[in-house]
Length: 336
Ligand SMILES: C=C1C[C@]23C[C@@]1(O)CC[C@H]2[C@@]12CC[C@H](O)[C@@](C)(C(=O)O1)[C@H]2[C@@H]3C(=O)O
Ligand SMILES: O=C(O)CCC(=O)C(=O)O
Ligand SMILES: [Fe+2]
Image 1: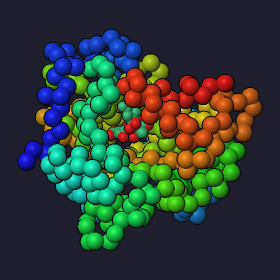
Image 2: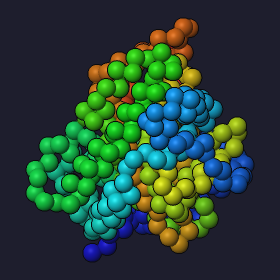
Image 3: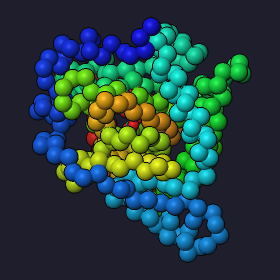
Image 4: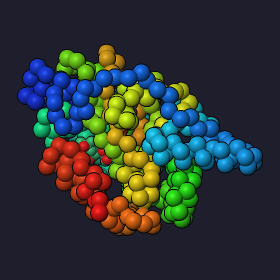
């Protein structure tokens, strides 16, 4: 049975003969000239723990500067064994290779009903269409899985434990620099709303360039991305889309909307997107650090840029916006 979502049949009415990049939709920043791929600031996390105080301070400074200037950086020597990624990518591939009907079936894998998504069902124009499929696996749900010897569950559990440890370290450092009590990020592993998003990007089928994932900011505090070597991730900086060069062994970290709000706009939740690969599929794993639904997001600086809001309010507003317009409006809704 086919494992592919029916992109072609279901979206032919939206596409016709055009491609997302050739439209003048407001999502697009025209002209979309592709600049050279860049290497993001690369941060060696071993300096945080090797006992050399000068190197530790330099490492913290690099990270903070990258969060302010780029909203993105890459990390190496994070301490997660290569085997953990190999196992996780293998399970991810096996999961996406299952039949389409199995993937959409309600309560597949006992997760909540809408953990599987493909395309963008709410797209109103080609510029909002994503040629990819994804699973959202929230931390709260993994812990309630029965231990039935299923490799996917064990592997996801192991993966998020490792990645959450790294996430915690980064969040605490970034918090301290903007006068947020690092205890705010105590027990990230316990943050049941944090989730792992498994992304599969399909090779282009609609002519020229197509979005694998439409331009967006992440709703998280931070996101930690692991990707294969295919590439396609681009970020928007100084009026241009810039391709991020994949770097083996490195994880990509980006600031999400919650940290931008918490830091009163000091850290940047930068718009990014994925361009579909040519003749090849691409896999990635994105871990989103999110607070509890009732957590109040309130910055302590003055004057405040954003009104305080709960994570529930932000999430529900974003979901409503995506449903009604095909796109997330984001933090601009909460400006004072
Ligand atoms: C169609 C969309 C779903 C999404 C918001 C968006 O407009 C574009 C990107 C999607 C994304 C990707 C990262 C996160 O998983 C997410 C929650 C987010 O903040 O942006 C999702 C949104 C979603 O699934 O609702
Ligand atoms: O796959 C990628 O490179 C980016 C994924 C992403 O932006 C997301 O899942 O929010
Ligand atoms: Fe993202």
